[in-house]
Length: 411
Image 1 (cartoon, helix red, strand yellow):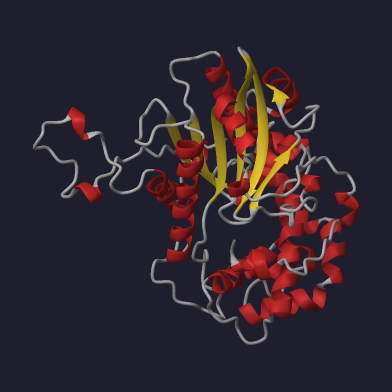
Image 2 (cartoon, rainbow, N blue to C red; image 1 turned 90 degrees about the vertical axis):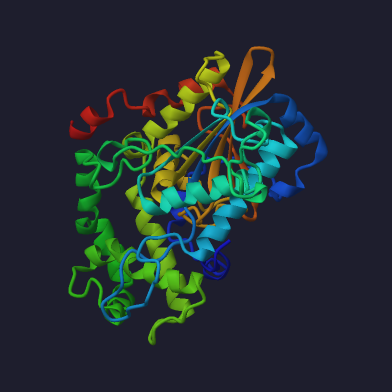
């Protein structure tokens, strides 16, 4: 877990207490994934048929350098750093432990019939996918040498051998699954909605509560100065994210910004992101296509289609996950439960959608939220239990899967 998640959330204040009352989440008691009991593990080994994993990318350098507090980032902006690389590699190691060693879902060596990897077409998501794959299939686990000539080597040395795993991506302009909320994707209905937020009475009212604070930290950074207060609140992430990168890499905060200021900015940034992804109408445009992808994956497995995979790995962003929150109507519960400590899923966290064959020919879907601290089972609204029959899951999500995403975006 990042420094932000440990220190900045230790005294987290919930800014949406009223919204949290509309709890749509049912969670199992917290327990680290590594401590899953033997009986449960054996049960999963018998029933698990496929899994779709949606990750938020790892720790990165900031997206820009603030005018008044520039920091050198030798790898460039918006790039996975050594901290992020190590974290995502360790995520891949956990995948190998769980899905190769513990559950036997996939083979120890990569096989195209078993694994499909897709990333948002951004450097940080592609890099995160690559590092996870390296952890999942580490150096030395290359192609099976028995199928080659005896004197043929896949790498200069056996310990360097690996199999390059394809990472699939589509142009940002056409990506309804991983980045439908961006300006590049041009989902006009969503972009119009989100651009208006900073001018709404809600943002003006909330911004006025913290006006002195927002104007002070913006002045220190030289960012968003002179903006209307509602707009300044909408742009608070532009102030917070470069400072958060400093903390994640043990770099000092600028003079005039304290740890308490960072906690306050974290709260406001999460409040802001929450309101950008609120309700099923927004969820249909920003997370519905991903939910449809999961359903399509699992129907293929249940019907034994030749192109079905066992592990679907998606490398995305916090807003990819927030769009899924909105589509499934679990966004108002994000302050509840032992792992739901904030509105934004932490870096490197993921959603796991599991497909289990609970009886011959009878399939069910289980959803988990997983962080470095452990895992939490989510009961999807519309399902009567955490293990939701595939037909029930399909019915529960039918209304949020767009039939023609591009048409709906422009409608």
